Image 1 (cartoon, rainbow, N blue to C red):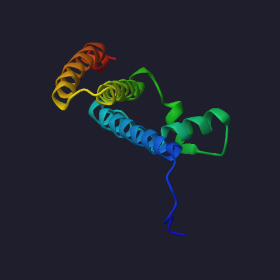
Image 2: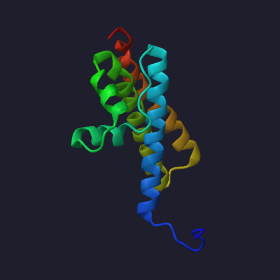
Image 3: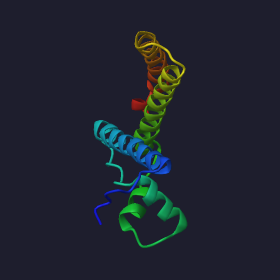
Image 4: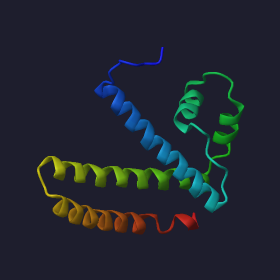
Length: 132
């Protein structure tokens, strides 16, 4: 089956969008971990974490990684989560403006203003993470 003729549902689109944001967060956390000299996060943190919490399977890599977590090793996750959340909120504000009929010029100007404000707050909030 090649999937031809199958319609994508709204739920499928939401799942795909959620997975894309998760991928961005995972990749960003890995990059931040590398910069901080911390171990790279697991390929699928959510699945690995939930498996470990439930006690499903025998995932030595997950157990070893979770056992080595400390305040500093969590910094990439915290930072990546905040950055991705900020991007999601700025994106949502832009989509709401467009849906409300704002012109491209108005939407662009407002999006730039929102982005500057949001990332200014984020920068101040994350400023001392390198010192953890």
